[in-house]
Amino acid sequence: MALVSSTELTADQSEKLQLLIDALPTILTELDKPTYDEIFGHRIGIEGTPYVEVAIRNEILLKFLVASEYDLALAKEKLVLTMNWRGKFNVLSAAYVEDFDAELEKMGIVTEFPGNKDNFRVVTWNFYNNVKLTKSWFVGFKAEEAAGTQQEPNGSPGLQFLRWRIGLMERSLALLEFSDSDNTKMAQVHDYKGASIFRIDSDMKAATKEIIKLFSDHYPELLSKKFFINVPLIMGWVFGFFRAMGIISASTLKRFEVMHHGDVSGLFGEDNLPAVYNGGLENRKVPDIFSKTVKKEAIALPTYAKVLLQQQGKIEGAAV
Ligand code: HEM
Image 1 (cartoon, rainbow, N blue to C red):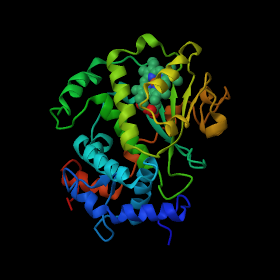
Image 2: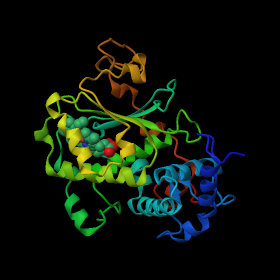
Image 3: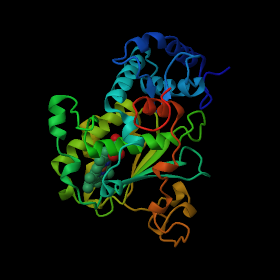
C-alpha cells in the first residue's frame, strides 16, 4: 500500500519516507519534552500509539521531507525543532483558546470555498493595509529576540500579533485534508490596498521578519500560492526587498505572485467573492469577504489537539 495518497512517490522517495517513519522512535527521544509529539494538531508517533492516524502522520512527515529535498538527516532535525517550538510556543492555545483584540482580528481571516480544487479551497486573507497598529500588539518583540523566549504572564510566549497570526495559520490547517491532493495546501492573499510605507514601523518590521522565519522553519509545503494584491505601483519594490533578504526559500518564492489590482475571481471563483475582489460585479450573497469568514467556533479541532489542550486544562473535557 502506498504510504501517502496526496501524491505519487517514486520508489526512491517512498524508501526515504519509510526510513523517516522508521526513525520516529529516535526522533521522539530527541524532543525537549517527550510528551509534546504533535504537529498541525496530529500526533507524530509510532503506529499503534493512541491517536496516531498513520495516513495523516505520513503526509505530515512527507511535507518535512520534501522541504528538506529528501535529505533524511535534515528532515529529522526539522521535525524535532518544529515539535519543540510548537510545544514551547503552545500554538494550539493560540489557535483555539486565546482571545485577541477585535481590531487585531480584523487583520486576517480564513475562508473556505468548497467547490475549489488545486489547493484553492482554504484561503487565508491578510489585510495589513489600513488598520491602525496598536502598540500593545508588539511591545516586547525586541526583548523577546534578546532573551530567547519571553514568557507572558498567561504562560504563553510571544506577543499578541505573533500569537494571533500563528493561531490563524493553525486554524486554516485544521480545514485542510492532508491526504487529498486538491486540499493538502492552502492559498494566502495579502491585500495591500492603500498600504503606505510610512505605516510600517519598526515593530511591524520585526514581527514580519519573525513570522516569515517561523513559516519557513515550521510550516513546510502548506502553501499552494500566495497573492499580494492591490500592491500600490510605488510599493512594487518591497517584493524585491523581501527576496533580497534571503530568508524566503526559492521554492516558496516561486509560489508568490504580485498583482497591482484586486480581481482574484479567476482564481477563487466569481460567486465566492465580493465586488472588490471579483472585478466589480455586485454579489448579494457575499457583501464583503468578512461574511465568508470561517469562525473559530466552527472549526473542529483535530482529535489530538483537543487531547493536549484538555491535558493542559485549557479546554473542557476529560484529560485522557
Ligand atoms: C503596510 C505595508 C505592509 C505591511 C504592514 C506588511 C506586513 C506583512 C506581514 C505581517 C508579513 C508576514 C507574513 C504573513 O503574515 O503572512 C508580510 C509578509 C510579506 N509581505 Fe508584506 N507588508 C506590507 C507591504 C508589503 C508590500 C507592498 C509587498 C509587496 C509585494 C509585501 C510583500 C510581502 C512578502 C513577499 C512577504 C513574505 C510572505 C511569506 O513569507 O509568507 N508586503 N508582510
